[in-house]
Image 1 (cartoon, rainbow over the protein chains, first blue to last red):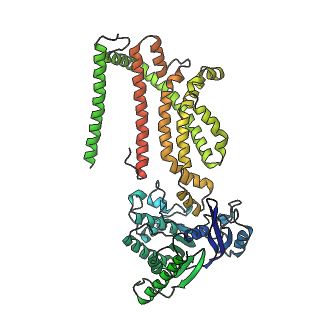
Image 2 (image 1 turned 90 degrees about the vertical axis):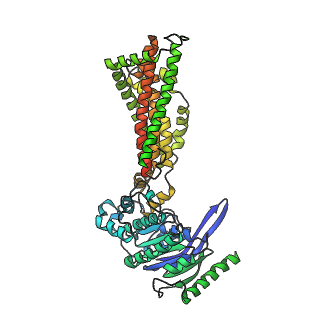
Image 3 (image 1 turned 60 degrees about the horizontal axis):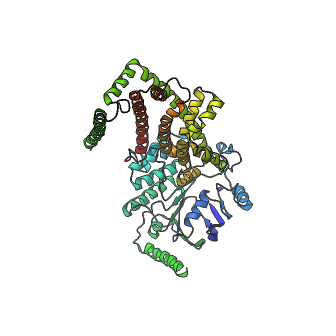
Length: 275
Length: 261
């Protein structure tokens, strides 16, 4: 997935606030790309634009078309996204009238679990799956994968925060996305649950082999799960680190990791100094 | 834990019964004191006998059936209209700007003030009676249902966007289920208002019904029957309300807000 020249601004009480200022980024189809940055650097905005939850001011995300490409983006965005899309649309998606046919399925995991409180765990997991495509094997596979077996009939409020987030993860995987976006998914969890969820994410990543974009403000988290770490600063990609050669599970206390951590802290601290 | 809850329930029922008993005793004493005539304040025994007489002859049951039918008809029409209005307000942007003003006006007009016009337009049959009930119960239901539809969580709607649901699918699978608690509360309040409107409705040339029973007894100076009628309306109203509060409690529990039964 290639992101180029992505721009986005918001109007905040009369002032235009530029959040993304022509961001270029290449995401591997397989791998966990971690976007690291301070609060307010535009991490979440980037993710929302890719997910198609908001239209971009300019620029393009190719590999698929964002949700509002046909309606709200400028011509360049919509046109180029259409021409670069290499995969054929599924027939079932064609009959949707004027709405743009998007070619890749994007799964999103938000900072909050965002489960439907009126549905059981299993119904929540299958929320994004078409009725005809729902089946027992898939459900029990996902329950096993996310360690939720036995809780399929439970209601969201009966689960702990970590378990709710696992349901959200299972829901996103049930949709069989081509790409997974995660917006600080473990930020609200306590240290131990968080560490456990990171290991589970890696385990799931190793079985499912999806492309994942993982947004976080935690350097440790980035070093634990990333195959690529991108530092976002001032609306553009400041620096990118390739960690494909570092095997999982990683020892953050090793010399290599400690060195990288020092670099990352320095990078982000420098940012603070300038602001 | 369960034992404790059960005991709490029994204790609460006992307290309610005690309150009613004290009220009855005060009533009995006041009636027996001879300050007021039996016409102004009939003693409880007399009311009970009137009630028993009407139960025995089947008259009371007939009145209850007739009134229930009217309440149910008016309430159902109100509910359908309130749902339609709520859906329109939430799904069609700016639709409410067109009819909101008129509704706001009608909300402030007492239904009984329209009786004369309703008789002129719709005659003295069932239609006019049901319209009175609709007018009384529509607004509380509409306001609650509307609120339910409009307050669907943006966060959950975004989940629908992520899974590429269409507007209609988002409505059916996110907005409508989110609105269920408010819809039930609206229905509960609306049903209460429907029962309260029964007297007004049956002021229009009724020949049966609980409202008629009270108005007829008034004409006949049978204050014991008036009180018997009032007691019946109150009891039927509480019964309807209980059914709804059980439903609401169940829904609230399923969503993890089960403490406020």
